[in-house]
Image (cartoon, rainbow, N blue to C red; front, top):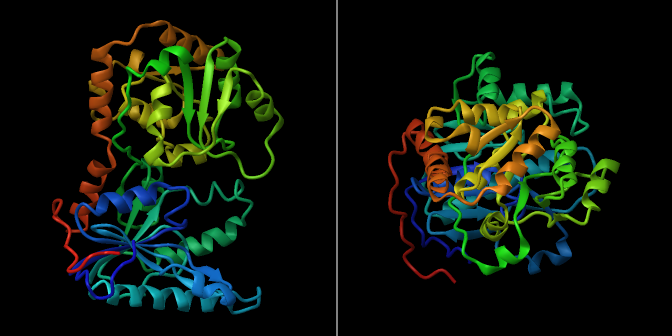
Length: 399
């Protein structure tokens, strides 16, 4: 949908600058932006993208209205070679694009700017509050990304020197930033409401299956998935693969006849895949990076009433000790195995049980307390945005 010029008339806005485009893989900052849109209009800003001048006229409008209170800006800069000073040009183009987009949206008051990367967005639009969103442990993840920890530390120090607030995606990250004297709000990843059809006759034809939803990174213990498949259970894997070639153990796993890997699926398309899974898997290795990042894709299984079996890792321990964990039967709903074999035993026991409607209801009730909408209500209060509000209507049709 194209955003009509000077027709929206937003009076207040939050600008969210992401590290990924809106129409690609959706990390947590996308969910945060969409949930905040229930409280206040949000302008989501993609990373600056070089565009070939000869094809510039074929590009869509950089400002798109993608919801009644959510707009996307895709800043573009003429493609140039990798010469010194190109980064500064990209920054200047991007910051100017943000100001132009805000003018088209009615010149709203920018209540806050939330930045999830080291790109120099702060100060681009006279924002009242500067918020750094930390979804990853940048330092412990530097080796995984093959980046210099010294450079990451410099970038992090530069970003933190101008912020008013840090939003951290885990308690561990919250402690890291508090130790640097920064005010922190802990906002763990949440989940979205997903509907599945448990009466779909295709489920019975396929048989019962265990499944993993998430990125097949080196934070995943392939031995756990292998042990489950070794017992003859069907395993469904939904998510992106690792960057680069597959490791030998992962190639072996994915070559099994009872293992199906369907690749990534958008949040809008994830429901049928969660519906095919009878036991969710949380096969994470216990590393500093995993403890800081809390990969919470496993909440999707609880959202549709499925039990989860995982390794003894931080994300499972954290959910088991959360304030509302009393809603769960921990041995049945969120079980831990100390070894790959124990995880496989627990999975087998779950797959052998008939589905219990009472267990389904309690898992769904638990997951409702961890929805993104609930998470962002706390953040909206901290930003002084109040409760959910009706979005400002457009004064003319959006074409």
